[in-house]
Image 1: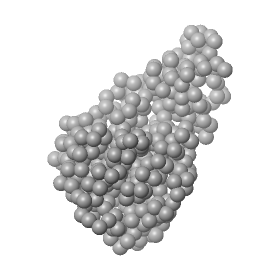
Image 2: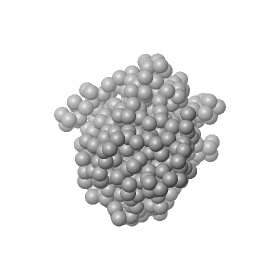
Image 3: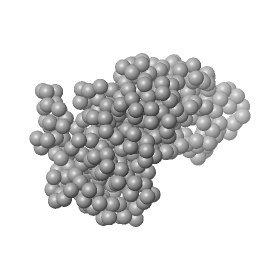
Image 4: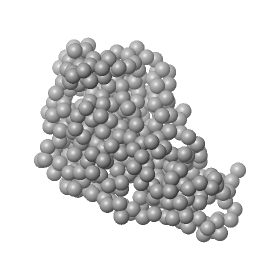
Length: 412
């Protein structure tokens, strides 16, 4: 079987090479290879450029000619914040919220995260794997090739490990790459007899050592918010987790201005949500390597304002966009639609929106991905259109016809 392949010809190839990680981006910064091709060998990009020239250069390569329609190519997308490992439903929560109850009100009355925790604890590891695979398949149809997946619905030693093992085993059964994050510090469960600090210490002394021993995750997260964990509790926990060799991210500034500065102070890889971020915290993000991750799915699901991406970008921050797909606050799970709506609301350029779900999202995960360049893994989406801007102009209705993930050509 020939491992050398040429894909093309394509009307446009959008490589996203040579674009900055931080700050505002105008569309004229994007370079386009017209009538181009991509040479792939053993799952990596060997070459790219003018299609006819590549045919002459690689005469022995297998030609992957899709048909005679116009196609454009962009990097496969990255969803850098999801909760797609869960059991149960939160339909009732949604009905209460649209009837006027706040997210925090619903949680205080026995709904919210706790109801998902109950269902997730009752589910078997096999059932959780099936749930993950269903959700990953839906994301793949959108052209998403890399997905971060959090625990955080077990909230005890046994079930947090069950979730992380389910994520690890699901990763073996899907072409989508799943990157696990330990979110035992989502909230303190009601059945834990102790303080917040005692619960966090239990995670550190009992659960984290097994996570390390079984290589279940190298990233950790904590929810900093009223009803979850305070800034001081988060600081102490995060410092200890970082000392143990984990990368740290944080749910912050979702309902109140709370921890934006803390995420930067601790050198977290990202601070996620930021709907209520204040001016001082924006300036901290703008002078750091901590990625600001906007979650428009939560804004849409809760009927609240979007993360102020325009201001963050204009002040020089690195802004990524993720779906936050979860059963409670962000049930849509449609990154393309959410990113397009966020872009329209926040007046983001096409370049900024595309960067937010590709190489800037990769930065939030500290991985090398999200661009089409020689030496990188072959991970790209093929859309039936003659202009890449239509991906966002159609606000999620235009989906990729094919996705290439290393050696696999996936038709949607």
